[in-house]
Length: 267
Length: 185
Ligand SMILES: [Zn+2]
Figure 1 (cartoon, protein in one colour):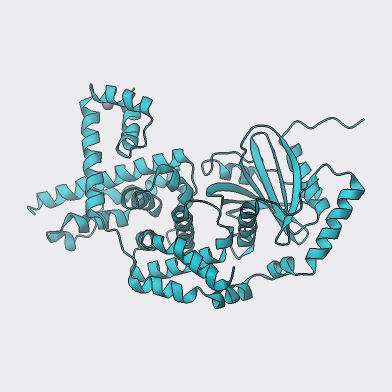
Figure 2: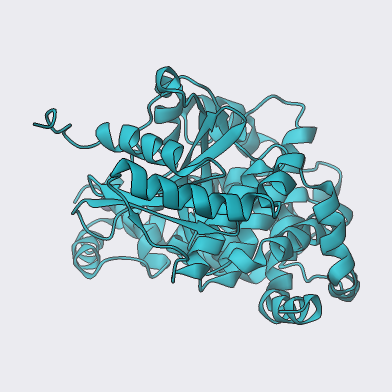
């Protein structure tokens, strides 16, 4: 172990976040290197000084009261009133029965390669996807990087998240890329790719898959939104929008085609 | 669930983390008035999306929202043109070069001060992306994994940022302690 590596690992040692094997190697280095021992002592003193000397500010009592007073139902009413028009349109009751019939028709008529799962059992996870989608439709939160250029959006994610989402502009297929964003799903950071289809916004959340096998597209509705989920290439995809089944299926197959070897033409 | 029951449930989960939320906001905004506004805004947003919260770590979830609200406000007010996103790039080094050697506050450093005041000023002078990892790690005692979730960066970046933040802080601390010693304080 050289001193550079030792200096990096010192932080992990003092933070109790070091792997046992690294700890053994680091301690072997510290046994023979006086300058790294001095560095450890300095870091240790700094940590003690910060924890013992810097302020941990306490919320004033009035703040809890202020928040509690603003929570009850009038808050929700106000927020709804301020929500963008497309939110209320997507949630309108007009859409729901229509959606159900459209989906059934699509399933029966076109021999699609997805599974209709109806109302998902994983409702909490779905609610979180819906919440993230709605959140993104609020002013200023659709994208962190706004660009239709995949060569701008793709590198933006590197260094921000531990995965490389396949970013492709699909404007030629009717799904222009709007940009990308870091979001927060299921207690974990997630890459969000944002596409547009006509007036509709489609969020595609990309996270590491539980296993490496490919899972075909499944579709279901939640709170009036259509959610498509599939996985492949070690990544799990969750797409959500107020588009119809056909559009969602098309987008999913376009994205999936970019991540796995494209099968040859049928027949 | 009725709105009242929903608010009660939210309160049970979110209010225990109010001090953590306020502390982060207070450090990022560097004043009480803004910190209170940011926390209130963050809690209202959290309540709005609360039905979608399915994670187990309410504190990290809330802190990530507080952080986002604070950075939105800081970005709107930013006059120096330094993008927060560039903290891990070499160009950012130049922007913060002045930090270490700059006397924190020549007027008050003439007074004998407790370590508390000195450390508060040194941490407050750090760029926000370094300041926040010090606050989250040392004061809120979050794990690397939790910091990664709150800040929205990979684990490796948490470590490199924490290392840089401490190196900057250590240098500034030693410089200021030495300066005060040289003045016979
Ligand atoms: Zn060494």
